[in-house]
Amino acid sequence: MSRVVVGVDASSMPTAALREALSEAHLRGSVLKVVSVWSYPPLSAEERLLTTASAVEAETIERVGETVDRLRHEGHNSELTIKVDVRQGAPGKVLIDLAVGCELLVVGRRDRSRLRHLVLGSVADQCVRHSPVPVMVVPSDWERPDRSGGVTLAVGMDFSDSANEALRWTLGEAERRNAAVRVVHSWEEPMLVGGDLMMAMPPSAALEHDAEERMDRFMSALDVPDGVSVTGSVRRGPPAQVLLEAAEDADMVVVGSRGLGGFAGLLLGSVARRVTHLAPCPVGEAPIENQGGGTVQIRFCRSSRRAASAAASVRRSMPNFISTLET
Image (cartoon, rainbow, N blue to C red; front, side, top):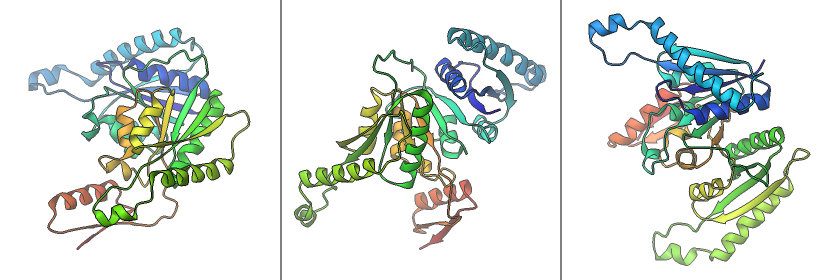
């Protein structure tokens, strides 16, 4: 039977993520696996002896189980099969390992701080970068609105393989939940570097026209499942900003990860990263697999410590796909 995995922190109990995971498991007819990962806090030697793994696990199972039961009955999911699994270790790694073979991994996001997207290392970050299956990141303050017009899923489109995979996944999700899909493409003028570039720039009207024409061609060739309503939207502005605006009245916004084991997720300032950390609604991220089996080559300057450190980090993350070349 298929599985949906959700990670929870027993100390804070992210009910928004749990509620969405219950709903997703119900939609899919899946077993819901609720995973809580713990590690020993800083303790004295005497305290550590008194804090046994079995005691921590028993307390965690009881706490998580009470919350799950309450939410399950609130959502009328009494028939849903739910398993609570308590593990010791690094939360991100444990969740990624348990996600193998499941349909969806659900994790919570603690806040919507404007600075949070600059911070690496959270559990949600690790799951988005490295999960082998689609990930749903749920804001801690998310509550499903009662929309009279039905459910809407927004998806970003830049015509890349990653975006196409995200759209394919979104269409499947829309068919599953009888939702409408809004495909969003953004355009903006090139950055001005000097007077010569300014002279070569096409007028804004021409850029907008080109973007709309490309979107029209794409939408007309799109294979849409029966019963799913899909509309295209072209908006001016930076991609992340445009997607965040589209997320304001959506039930989920979907972005594509660049695949290759999470390569794009390591780049600060990426569109997917900003949207994941700042969107007001759940964010779905559909990974793509490395189809070619090739190697990504990263060039960096020997004198640049920051570049060399970044390259080393990427190489450790993807040892099978990365080679580095000093210049």
